[in-house]
Length: 240
Image (cartoon, rainbow, N blue to C red; front, side, top):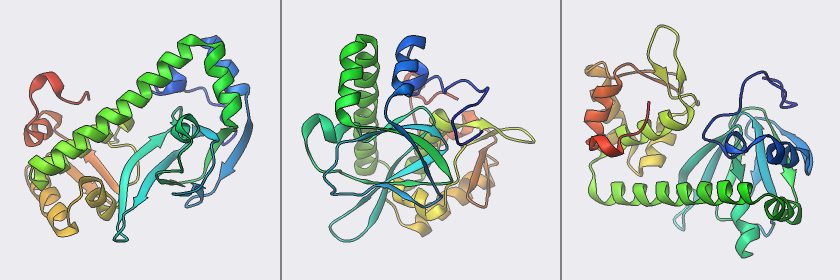
């Protein structure tokens, strides 16, 4: 993958760019200016007053929120084809989170008036963006329910399934990688649990050969068993 965004690979099917038809996709990618960010560089700061929107062209970013107590919470990971920062221009509020490049990435930066004009020109795109926002809100609601009603091992299994559904890639030697580099402290932040509790949950999954764990990497070896650990009914199980 080149940082200029050119690639023979198709856009991820569930991303905003991937869901657009050819004409609105080309229009969207022609807008704004292309920017490159190094690993660890901040795209957006929590609390800042800005309204521009990013379209991710390569790589992954972390969406982080700082609580009043100073704790950092990893809210989500976004990847190629996703939008970042679209809410601030819609309601005029300050940024709710910090956005950080996981590795070197490229993104298209659009002033909000250009983004808004794009949505007016393409009703199809407006429907896709609205569905994307609804999916983000649904995911946030699911996490709140998990945090209030499920034990840490269940939350860890569900978090891995969600990440796998969005970013999973075939792993060398079999199984499916979650597709993004993720430390155990970051996984603990996702499920709102202590690092020792998450380490214990991962150890249990490894003991049953459900996953293998490397440096910032996780490979799901037995997807049905992971779904069993997640205690999800079949109709709402995350897709492989």
